[in-house]
Length: 196
Image (cartoon, rainbow, N blue to C red; front, side):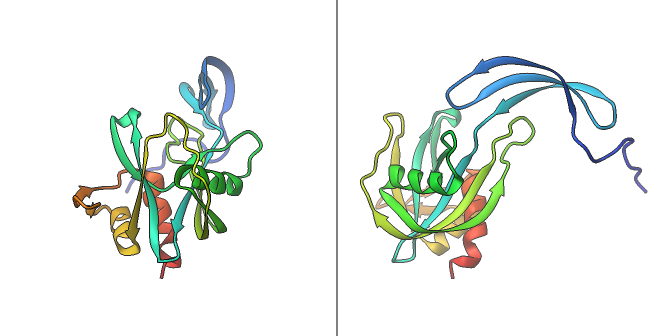
């Protein structure tokens, strides 16, 4: 029989001291000295992020529209659903539509919420709202200069296989790819019941 750790399992930590280390365009980094609900104290490095939205786009042919995007933090290209950071005061639904339009030139007329996730709660407060986007209208894409993006359309079965951890082949060269991007895998798995 295992015993429970001492102290309460409810409540939130009291911030005793916060020291800003860096304030950037996308994130803020600080250290926070805390008193936990069980009265223990500790210091954490915390990243504050304004949040993001991600959208599983399904076109009129039933293909899932993904982006293959260069991500310098992991030194490589990832296959992802379109996603991006919320602007100040922006609603997640508006962000999902804007990012879809900017990244792939498709704006969903219909968005179905798929909940939200905290991808890295051990050190960041980023929350990502997930959506299923259908009834797509073509618009002019407006990628930022530092966004290296290729459009990839996959049959639903292949997209769901990627989300489940399988490898699929894409493009004319039949290049094998995986999907280690957590937000994309979770968004696709949550969309699965709606994909038929």
